[in-house]
Length: 95
Image (tube, rainbow, N blue to C red; front, side, top):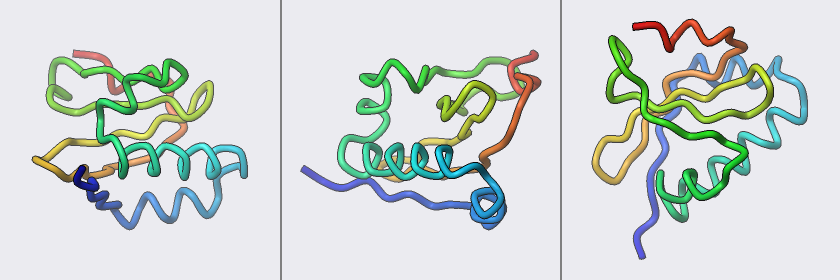
């Protein structure tokens, strides 16, 4: 079984420095699932509500870290690029 690689944008680290502790803990759990099982592992945890985006965000996936917190990522082969973690009102879903 191969491990998945996670690449985090610098902006992700900056957001995590200011995020509530429970969001940081949830993100660390999210990363561990990705490293071991990849995106398929995320889809098995219903609380993440991992899904495929449409429209201009086609190819990207969000996972829920809290009621309003999302991690947005892109799968590239056996690696996963984390593009952002943000407090969002679901604006990224609009097509």
